[in-house]
Image (cartoon, rainbow, N blue to C red; front, side, top):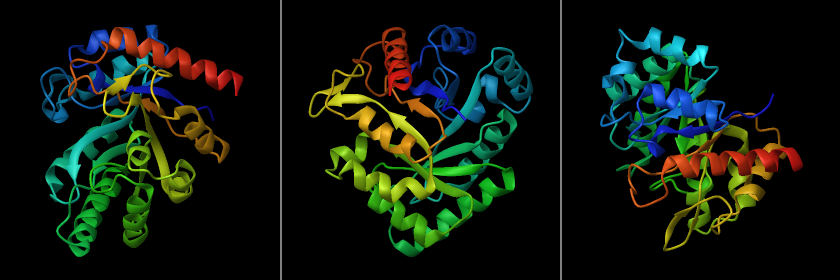
Length: 257
């Protein structure tokens, strides 16, 4: 199975659904990861993703040959915002997306983290999807994510390797991969320069391709998703420039590796 090439809608906060459909195909992507839509961050409240419009939105995506590889929520284990996670799991199921992204946050205790994560996982299982816990915030390394997932041992909870964060924390990429490989279901890519910001692929210091090689060589079949943080960093390149550049670079690498 080939890895779907995707991008997060975090990178195109000004695009409406028709623009997303057109540009996804034009720029060479197979899938999208949903993270906000126009001025709405709580996806189930955005017009194309309200319960009454989901079937039509899924039809439009299917007709365009575009998959939804992940619904990225603002669910945080430390906050235990279960209703939010449930709604995003239901949305993912109705759009045919296999995963819902969650964060770890800063839990008050390991006991509360495990309790909340179990509740999140049960909600995902009930909806027929899985959760992916991102290497982010207090869980920015493979070591911390793997430890929590191992202790929780929930059958619906897996890992998301954001290549950027563990590397910036000084964790060797071989260690990150070894720790996450048994649970790895989703990958975020982006390049950048430490202390400066995000860059086009190949212009930064993140070893994106060696990291991807570790995952793919060990049998990773999930999506490779560009998380271009244009919504949070409006000064970085527009998606009309960054998205096709990343797609071209990744596809060239995949063909020649």
